[in-house]
Length: 140
Image (cartoon, rainbow, N blue to C red; front, top):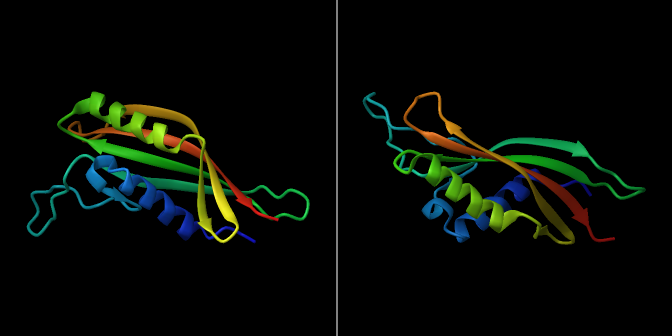
């Protein structure tokens, strides 16, 4: 059975939120940021976003499986690169080599691949970008 990627992303958001990553500010979208425009909603930093998701076929024999590549980004301002690295390290410790159940008989095996911490283009924010390889496993 193919993986329901919406359920997979929901499971990741719940896992990160329950662990109080960024005080629970974990999104599967980039929230509105602070702006001088009237009516703009100011975003509280730091926060975490499930960003790019790539899905590939990873079938073995008759078993239909998916291989996902999930980018997780951390955004921070006040704490600079050190805070972005600290939060990234906490996410890695939480998710690396984790098996996460997503539905009856289906689970995700999460493996950390890399982290990059850098200044955002706006010159005020810092980001940590992590890439995880996620194997979809199904009980036979």
